[in-house]
Image (cartoon, rainbow, N blue to C red; front, side, top):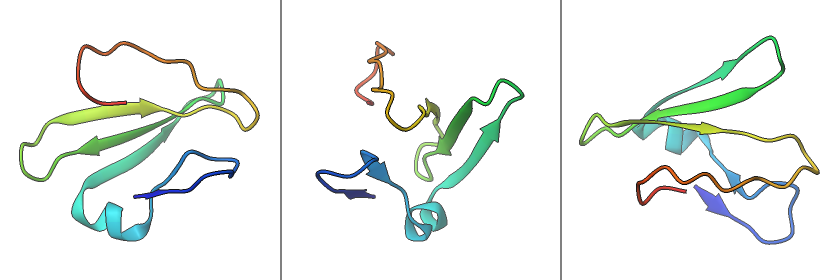
Length: 67
């Protein structure tokens, strides 16, 4: 994972990240996109919704330490 300031994105997930995790992208017909990730150590699955460029993300309380 790369965290870079002053870009049109907050997080860029690269191939090395995908190689160690089980991850996939889900697109739906309403043009929404979700990134699904499974932790290789715990097998816990987390789904992260994405947002369109220029639209600020809204914070969602998932009850976990993820964001």
